[in-house]
Image (tube, rainbow, N blue to C red; front, side, top):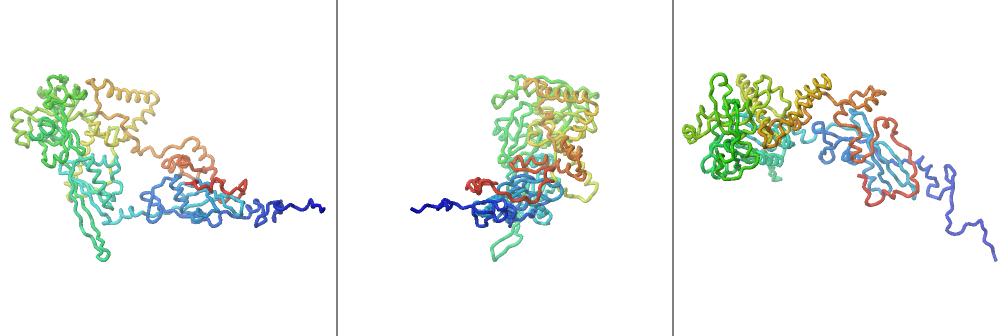
Length: 629
């Protein structure tokens, strides 16, 4: 019998070969090269660009995506990373290649003003069957400035498609000042090309009809109004049956304003819950809220009811029509003597609002002893020594005939208290407006000059300043009104804190104790306390954001140590850091890797390819459910 040679390999046994470069024993492959030698010779990143260009609009800071689309992305965010990856030419086609997979992507720190973005990419590719190589490289994106379509339209004349003209036929601008604060808080002016202001209204220019319709819908929810729409043909294409129109929307706001005194028709008073005919306009929203100044009863009138039967105020809330009164004393009104014609049960807070107040004109102090006694719906706010504003119905001739007959017959009150004055305005200080601890933000508008006469223009400017001061007095006396707007800390408050810090810790503690005491005095005692004043501006209502005299934020100790070690040539870094926040925070929040400032100096543009251990290609990344972004 023949014997089998032990040196002859059996059938089906794999025979190893030597690597053609280093000579080690490996399993046979088409190139007869080991993985390490393949990694030293192969370039996994071939066909993938390492430089690309991104376009950013300098006006709105949005990034260009494709086909005229612009998106808003924060630096180091996941959205911006997705935008960068979509602009890498070779990587976009490689995503559909079964031989390559994107493993990781992260941000690399760049100079703040270099107009460069750096992304660190790690990919895997199968160079031969069962041989997987992994390589990391850096892609540099050059940021170029390019205006978006919306920003281009702002600089072109006649580029608007829809115009919204907002008007109110009154002699002041307090309603538009309030409307301006509502627009700022809700961001309703976004997408508007430009805003022009006039004495009796404002014009809003929009590039699209739907944006103007959205703005009108916002106005309908905050003020009572009526709208008229018209359109003008600009051009037409008969071949394609396409026409170009410009739309004009005329919005007329109800002429009633806060604190106006009304004398309601008898029928209207019955429809509003049998309320008294002499009422004050409490506030204006999409409905008109009125209050009886003698009983505290409230009612609401819809805009449909008003436009069906318009009401003219007998006294408008102008500074020339309001009289300053000094409170000499007050007594709460007992429940059993109140006039409650509607038979509605008063609320617990309303039962403590009414009071008999004794008033005297501020101009009559020291001249005569004339005193007035009347009930007031804000009696719970007043105490002896306070100064308030009111309507003097004794010496005023009313425009309404029925109201004038009742005034002559003595059926109307002698005085109607409107609101209480606070701070330096009550004491008559000259610089009371500058001493306020709060301020309001304003819209960026274009003021249209309607008169060429310098004297008339100066008179209108003085009237605008007077209207603004009257509006600020309304704001500081109405907490419900302040809930619909944003109040910011003024420079005066920051100056007080700086002075207290300069005086020492004792001065800071005294200032904090004074603030706490003032807050407690305005909130303690509940609604049953006669000294409770819930309308005054509190520090917790004020927001930061408009004090610009402090400069950029100071760097922390660690960042200062980094700058001290040798980064003297990067002076603008802190300016960008104050705007963008701490570096790497946004990337960490979105789950992306970030190479910091010091580590970025050691990062190479392209690392050498390394074989993946296990020779199992992309088991974690070949799955159908795997998604990097």
